[in-house]
Image (cartoon, rainbow, N blue to C red; front, side, top):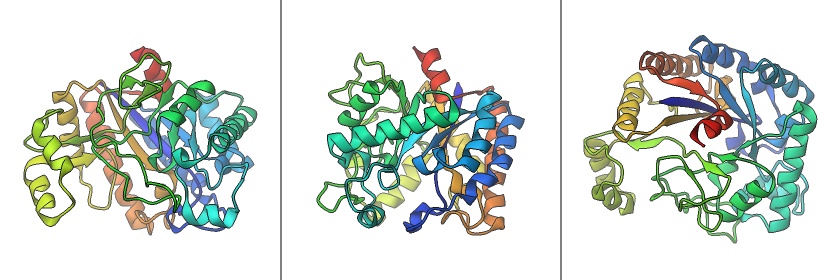
Length: 325
């Protein structure tokens, strides 16, 4: 089994929807990079435009890339990525999903983000994640057109339909019934296996309770239930849906449960994600002070140590693509 560590590398405290850009969190990445290397894992940093175009951030991240200690990929936040056809103040307020962009906006923003990474890092990015997980067949086709080979935007078992972007839009994607296994996507339907050159490596989100096996009919029942107190109780007792992420209530046993569920389902890869701003005190709602950052690192080290002990090997998104292919 492999482990892919993905980092949404973006400006400080994006949750507050700031009207100015601060990138102090990038200066805090060295501790994270050192910890990954200590256990033999290699992060994939997925860069937003503001990070990819900032000289100081480029200097820090390019050093990891040039030493082959990390991969550099792309992460599209439409509200910070030029060119802008809408008012910036409106973009900052609504935070549109990438799949809500017009064809021209999507193509132009992707082209500028990609070229910025090429110009500043000397490599063409091959890996991608959509901001706010906003991925659909149109985004997939644009990625293929712009020579990306791997996407990691799908969050199985999760629906974002009630999460608003464009006020005139339909909300985010519904990934509830998407597969957990990596697959080459169909450019017409991203929930179908196809023959395109684009590999989807879904975020690791698994049932870790009594019913671990994927495609269990009971999963379909609970995933269709509307959110309620009863659903939360049933999930806690029997299903225990968990992301491979670190939350304020995370504990080391969570990662063991996820690993065992992945093994039971013969998954070839685990995909972890974190925001770069979570690694700086005050950079996110998850890390308001140094104590909370230290707690994140405590969980992170416990996770990496456990995975290494189980024989899990590190890889990046594009490295996994070539192994999987």
